[in-house]
Image 1 (cartoon, rainbow, N blue to C red):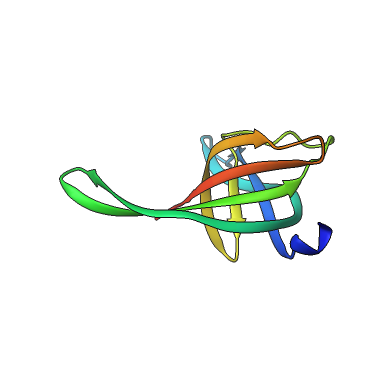
Image 2 (image 1 turned 90 degrees about the vertical axis):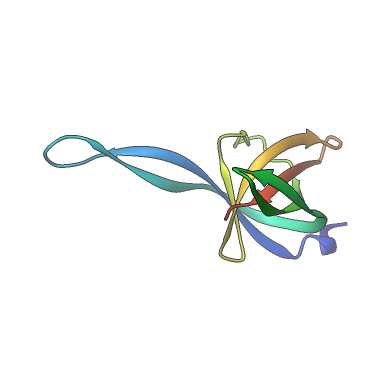
Length: 104
């Protein structure tokens, strides 16, 4: 089973960093780097603002970590591409499945 987890994946959290002179800046910070197996789920089309938009969805399976809680407001970084987390499903006591949509 462990041999199937051959890709590296990162989970990032959005932080607001204070700027000199006031205000804040959005910054994504790594919170977890782990091994995953990736399965394409589907490539679909949707209508947004009267334009057809392609959406690519992947299913990532990771070994469950008790130290870090994966949340839907995190993003996935896989092969220098960012994915929005759409669902988190525990598969068994050892692994979790996370579905992500490729960000445009």
